[in-house]
Length: 221
Image 1 (cartoon, rainbow, N blue to C red):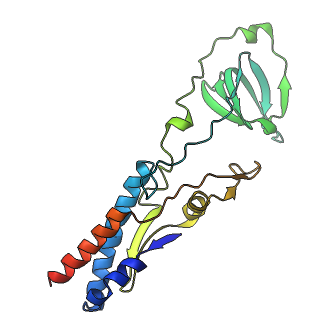
Image 2 (tube, helix red, strand yellow):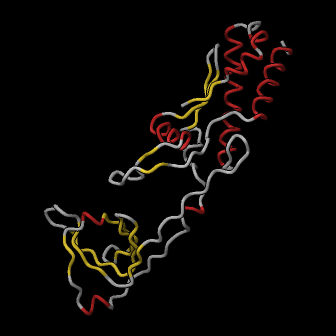
């Protein structure tokens, strides 16, 4: 998905036609790079091109917290599934995350891949182990942190146009949010419709700055 500068080129078309092909490409590449950086900064501020805040994330259902120890074999289908003993854990959707006593650290397991649940001995109920403490909730973290990086949000130009856009898998994810489309939050989850959040779109300040760059470049020749 891309956002080209067709409108800007129309406004400055007469001036651009005075430039040689190589000069035009150099100028448009510089414009694209600066606007890409501006768009990335705006996304970091969680704002649409019109300055409105992105719609907040929908509140998530609190995870199921386990206040008792669990013991099971994992994973299903393995020749010799591993014995797992956990005392402190939470379940979020199809994922079980907690302090794995045998491994001595935090581990995650797919609920539907548990081979068999096992009864606990009294000694295991009282066995000491570290605690699983949840980090900050996802809603406290800014959205699109990875999408807005230079690796995913790119810019380039020819002697005819300048553009910024997302590439590869990032483009698919961005399009869902840009147009408010349906997608699956996880491989086995049901499709949900995402709130529209305009990631790409020129602001008035960016349009004005791009025109200033065009004029400055042409008049300095």
